[in-house]
Length: 89
Length: 467
Image 1 (tube, each protein chain N blue to C red):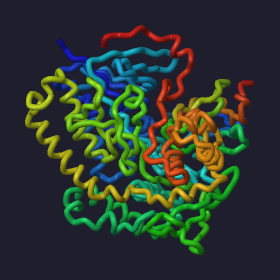
Image 2 (image 1 turned 180 degrees about the vertical axis):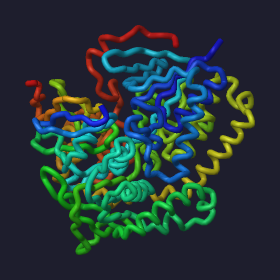
Image 3 (image 1 turned 120 degrees about the vertical axis):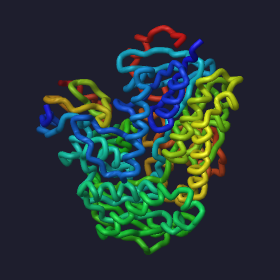
Image 4 (image 1 turned 120 degrees about the horizontal axis):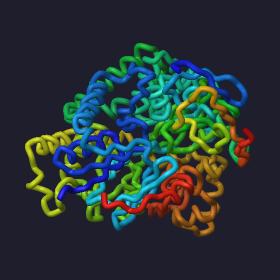
């Protein structure tokens, strides 16, 4: 699975085996990975799992750090909005 | 009887400590939160992504050597990646989660080699997507082979912004400007230090050559004062600052970019030592709250050792030498530390640590943040990103007489969110000092969990093991 695709907000994102979700999203030009409780758009900041700003909903599980999670074919990644965990998948 | 040792962290200090202790016959468990050993500086990409590197040859060789030495004893080390140490108590109980489960370890000795994280100075717009820590941007590049931005502004102090700018260029990125808090000559102005640190200085000069050849605008005594953009970063405003860190009016310039990579030094990951009750000292230039330790890494708590940057920020070369020294000390009964552990190799490690440390001491001012720079944080600036606590909120708590970090936290929630204060704690402390004269502040009481784990992982805890 050296090259594959997953989904972010319904869009198709290209990824390579071994890449994190955050890295693949950044490579695809996505910067806003979450909208926080105050309505502020948030993206990756520390890149190493410290700040939790890049947390997303992945395959129905909320609050998964995109920078610490390997991208997998067919993953469904959602942008969390405030306290809505996007667990509708 | 074989001694059991748990090393927390698989960066240069932790790898060297684990290697040395295992070589001396101890039963070593090495816990690390990453998927592969190396820590932040020697971070390894996934094998499927290949090993092209943008670092200097010297650094690549050091990475190769320390990983190879660890591999040579790896069959005798219980190495556990993806391990999240979330609590450490004064009785020597260490709590660790692995995904959906957790465990309590109670070894004869614990070596904390937990390193550092980047320290933030909040400024208007810094929550905009596209503003990253410089090391964070570098991590995206070196472990993911992805350019963290198309057009970058790199800023801050110390060596990291220089390294990141050069590596981005080597990877094909566009660097619009490199803004340095201090003039470079300050870093290069001490001949004796230059000689002691010649290895690092040489690599630094090579990075600078990459930057110069690319024609990158280099602005010294400039810092980012504002990030522009809402959904994503569009531009950064840089301004000149004086020696006290105060912005010089009228010297602003706006630069279009989609990445701002900024580093103002580091904060030690000392929460576990603090939770265990180890005595701390405060050194703003060297990581903030640091566990007090002696030449063998012994803290005030029997059996608890620290090695590398968590003991004081001094870089990877000191960390590796110190890891070896501390690993040797942890591997023997407490009364034997000293002459009994002193092999020829260890004497060499002591000398190496002393030499690299002398260089780090000479250049430590390059990581010093002048007090006035904290004025970049305006009343409307978010300080605690997790809980959206602005400076205004923190000042109102201070004005109401809440004079400790614990009290500020209880009143306005700074440090109560997902990151546990690891991103903002130093900023809250520095801003409390600037605006209310509280100095040096006592650390916010670290409590379990020092990092988030699932409730299920605690429930699924194995019983305490005498490792």
